Image (cartoon, rainbow, N blue to C red; front, side):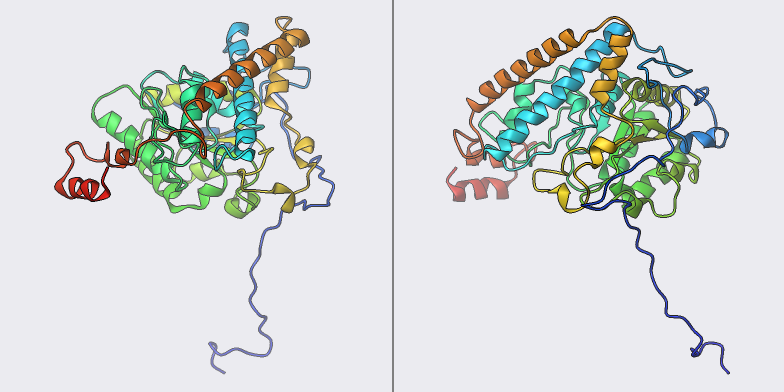
Length: 416
């Protein structure tokens, strides 16, 4: 009998489709999720080889323990005053998100995406950078701007696509850009941030500059080819870049196991490229800062790239177009074992005796008023359906340094 002919004993082929542990209607239980003890992970030297810290791609680096104390070798890198600033940064992101989500529901903008539950990641990472460094963010890193001096009103103007929109209504809401603040234009095509950030970092090195790059993607985007291409170039040329994966457990409506496949962690993928990889508690402001600072110093010292997996949870919907109750239990975010990043930092400062519940309420209310006042100023410039917008003629601006003949002709034909 020919070996390439099927027989009656052959079994039909099948595919394995990963399924999330909990679906709507289930009671989420994360008691079996391994959460390493705070302070247990070692802090290596920045010139370490990837293979020597292999375990850090499988554990979770944590600093804050259950009592709100900072423990272990990754602790004590920030003063209490710096931590208070970080707490206010996170409160500002949350207040901004709440206002803009409400504005979208009121029809003042078409689209919005919150960072609810993920505030510590962008806010802490930004503090590890220097002026001139460049972030290549996705749409959930508004904390990179809100923890700098970038005007909140300008962010709202962009969301409203009004007459004062810095991008003149030519970009989707929330897709900000600010070269001065190290915030590269957000791209809606996911995973482009990785290959672009690596290329920018390589260019910085070729020029003999001192500026590094940081790229950002979510867990779902690691399935894109740009992710793997970026790791090849970053590894081969030792690009001065920090590669951030925000694992918030869910892509748009698919859980992280779809993109992760059989890999134990997303961070472990960096090991195959010879890139040092670490996993960090993304809801622990101190841990995120410490790991980010380590990776930034490594890149700036010429030791090459680092891959960081920030383990967190997306509390809100993927966007204002999404209803997460269709694919996960409503109680799942409350059951998530790493807690709320704002509450954890607040409790740490209280445990240190430098903060109080009353101070926290006052700070939150002050920031909410600040955001509300900014919204009033932005709405004077118009909203999506009310008020002035950029003129049609502006669509021809900033496309070429010198406007070519065919665009001049089109503008004349449009009568603008």
